[in-house]
Structures are given as C-alpha cells and as structure tokens.
Image (cartoon, rainbow, N blue to C red; front, top):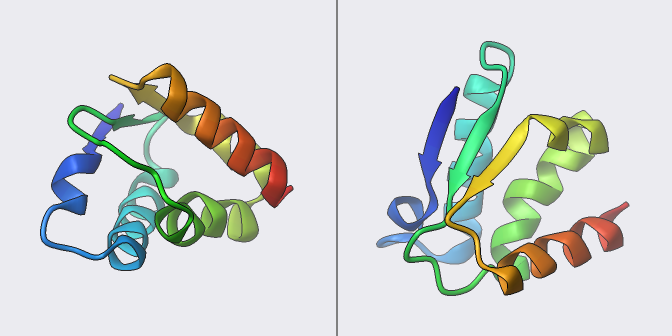
Length: 91
C-alpha cells in the first residue's frame, strides 16, 4: 500500500501542475501496489483543473476500472461528492 499526501503536492504548485504530479506518482506505483491511498488532510478544494490532470488523465489512460486501486483517507463528504460527480461526468 502506498499513501500520497495531496496537500504536500498542492503546496507551491498551481492546480494543473499538482494534478500532473499526482498522476505521475500514481502511475509510478500503479503496477507494483495493490492500492494507492490519497490522503486529503488539509485539502480545501478539488477544482477541475486539478482533477483533469490527475484522476481524469488516469481514467483516460487506464480506464475507469483503474479507480478500483485508489483509496481515500481524511476525505470530507463534500470532497467525496465532488470526486463522485467528476468521475460520473468523465465517463
């Protein structure tokens, strides 16, 4: 299991760049890890500019089933709803 701290990635980066970093980190661990946990502690927003270059690109490149490896921790109800809505629109 691998855990990625999203607030660390967002620090000192714009949303598209941070999303691309997250995507690269997920891809680097994708074939070797059973699951990848995204820690959302201290994350205030998940704008489309971030999701497009991370989760959206993962869905485009690996398919929607790739999300089965992704887990979330320290996620709020509004963040969970935001991600659910985003994934539904991408599909």
